[in-house]
Image 1 (spheres, rainbow, N blue to C red):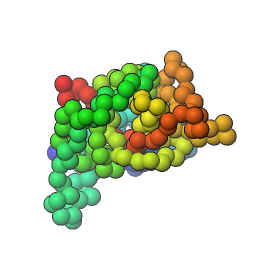
Image 2 (image 1 turned 45 degrees about the vertical axis):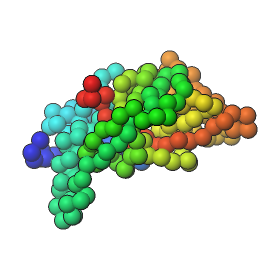
Image 3 (image 1 turned 90 degrees about the vertical axis):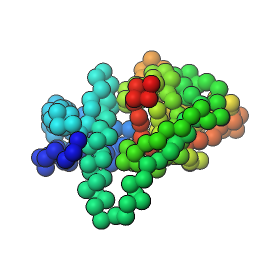
Length: 223
């Protein structure tokens, strides 16, 4: 994409809302959340605008998932080119990120600590600068568009807020889930009704937050 397509005011609102939600929570909003935020009468109105944005190449819609909305890298590049017009060229430098292990997004698997390989990627793909990539295996997060074989961009962190997508260690295993701390303790929530939440007893389990999801790359692009 050489030039950013012209968007209507409402399309721009939705694009900005999707981007902001991904930046703040690590996952896109649902159609219902978009409708509520922007005052639509139904989720169908949000869907129509999303379809228009998809036709203009600004995002991709993943079928069969309530949060199956992905911002296209070329659209993000166009947005960032506009923002970087007056910034020095070093801001355009590419990132070199290690791929660490292979994380199961279904049943957790043993973490593989060694770096398998490295990838060079565009910084504009991510809401915040990641420190490494993890390869997703399994479909427990499919309803927010995190699919088997995708590369999850992770920013190292030891704390998380409720609702954020985290990479967490429970014992010697690592998993990708939505974080929630409540009166009964910590829950690691899947985004697929076929999977059960993981409930963590912080006094008994060896538990830690390893990082926060800050972006996603389709794994097929690296096969």
